[in-house]
Image 1 (cartoon, helix red, strand yellow):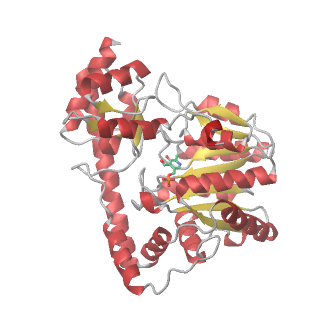
Image 2 (cartoon, rainbow, N blue to C red; image 1 turned 60 degrees about the vertical axis):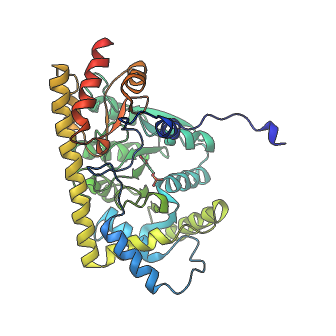
Image 3 (cartoon, rainbow, N blue to C red; image 1 turned 120 degrees about the horizontal axis):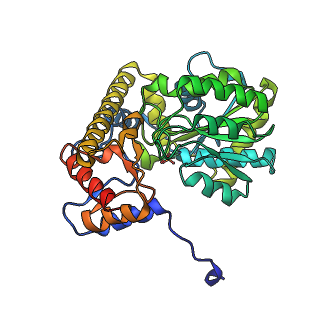
Length: 396
Ligand SMILES: Cc1ncc(COP(=O)(O)O)c(C=O)c1O
């Protein structure tokens, strides 16, 4: 039977991680995988996480099963972080999931149950796992214009025009903050215009929030999502605590569905719990409990926010220094768009052959679409990478 299993390509980012690991060159530089790194290239356990884990180990008396949808305290704490104080909790259904990927999957399964014919709109470009999960679920998918590749900025007109074509009941998948892979986000005015378009078409926004706190701050990064939640009857959310709590391998995520009426909430919550049961039964608990405890304890929370702010400042500094180094190395403004981006990622706008040249000749690894992890740069590697990028770009 198993010989009939079709061959399958490994995900490009996972493949890149393997190629980097196997590269014997001592000066190799990894700008591929999306993990935050400090100036020494490490991804440490955050201070508040370590403190909360210590407490948890001491206080926990059982490892018995929790609820199928995870702990209500986790739902409430993360919903407040995402949606702010005073959100419509009576209309909000929630389920804990294994990471943000799990939340994306569960929400899209919910969409399929509600309407298997619903078209899901994704940005061009987007995180490759979005179309991959959609294809696995067999949901109709369309792309909307997002990045203007000529300028490296947002194609406002294309974005609004394409989403204006969505139909009632379609789902529009948006990146909450720090768009992956471009790092280019809508400004507050564009979120307003988007809300008006969604209201007019009757399409439902689905906000994938994987980098809250990496862009401009915890509240600023959630402002677009909060606006949609205030203006629109229904909003879907997939949240990840992998990056902003550094809990990658613990798999902490939350699926949220804001319903039009409180009367629908119970049915949607039960369906999210049922979907968990079908796919993995109980969601991981350890990391979710750590997040809940950090958000509830003023001292731990303040320390977490401080460390997150320092991470954000480090990425901003790297981004500015890299943009400057690229300007000097290329003697041009070709990479000027980098400075307008936010968070961990930027697209350099190189051709696949140029990305391959960087890997083969300079031991610099980035994703094939020329996405770089800004947090993977250091003061020492910024000039090295900038001069190698300028060289391959000049060679064409
Ligand atoms: C856009 C986007 N959504 C969701 C995720 C989910 O991450 P995780 O499943 O590790 O929480 C990521 C992680 O790279 C991402 O970039």
